[in-house]
Amino acid sequence: MNDVVRSLWDEPRAPDAPTRTRWDWALVGVLVPIGVLEALFRSGIDMRPAALVVGVAPVLTLLWRRTHPLLMVVIAYGSHAAIEFVSVFGHNHDDTGLYVTAFVLILPYSLLRWGSGKESVVGIVFILGSHGVLLLGSTSPDGTLAELAGISILLLPAALGASVRYRAVWRVREIDQVKLREREQLARELHDTVAHHVSAIAIQAQAGRAVAANDPAAAVDVLAVIEAEASRTLAEMRTMVGVLRRGDEPDLAPQLGVADLPDLARRAGTSPIIQVVPHGNLDDLTPSVDAAVYRLAQESITNAIRHARRATRVRVAIDGEPDCVRLTVTDDGDASPLGPSSTSGYGIVGMTERATLLGGTLEAGPNRDRGWTVTAVLPRTGAPA
Image (cartoon, rainbow, N blue to C red; front, side, top):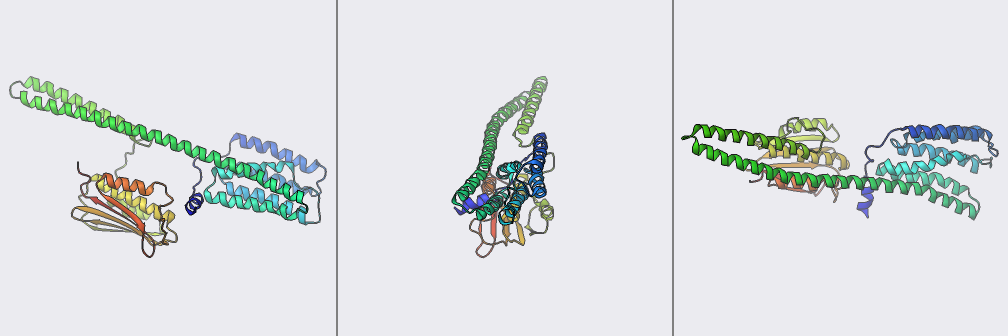
């Protein structure tokens, strides 16, 4: 149960939240004039200036309901609660609420659809609390039942927003799985195709060496075949590796490695302080191991910054031993049985997979007193062929 609550609390905002659209402007353009006319001319409203300001102005929150859902909920429901508080507990008992304030039903949907876990929890509590003002002012059982039914109505859009959100998340994950399976298939095809062409090149090279002494012209023909096979192999590798990349454009930047970790620490800022401590021989690492050490350290630092509570320092130690390189990332945050990576989904799984593919190991767990430690050991030359 605690894991479920923590997962909900740490849920990030939904990605790619759209900003204001023409439909938002159209909705506001319709509701504002209606609210003004209602506040000015509807009978039974004694506090017309207050109804005009507090009832109509919050309609503008619809323009920012996706990008700032919690703030818009606080503004709209806070205004609604304020005017209801005056109506219920003040000397005026006339109806001060406007029908146009029904727009607030849109905000719980936006909160659960686009807000983070923290925003959603805080927003729902605020909505229920603001609506509780009406319960306090209710003097009859029928009125209390009506207000409780109103709370249920408020929660329906929130439930709808949550269902739409997780439907969208499920859809994105399904698409990612399809892409992953396609990439795996292409990787197998890459292996088979390249292996075929390389085998042909090897056979032609052997044939060329056999006929070179007696028939130089035939050797030249063989070299032409080898050149053509090599060109086709290179073209196919470029095409398929381009498809295997996750991004739309190939990353032409140099591969980052152990030497780039101090720069990573500087970019991470000073809260917590990132301390990089290299030791031993780190100069002759293979490119794959060098890049893996950097990526494992990067992921560990990111997890510590995001999830290590009250951490002040993260120590990144890289030890170049004779036959392996050892990476140890330790933070001094509060001890937790779940660790800083417990909410990052598949972070530890991915790191372990990367280390295993290179013939190494990775362990992660809480320290005895404080913090969390990630230790990766990789052979200097990578996985054996």
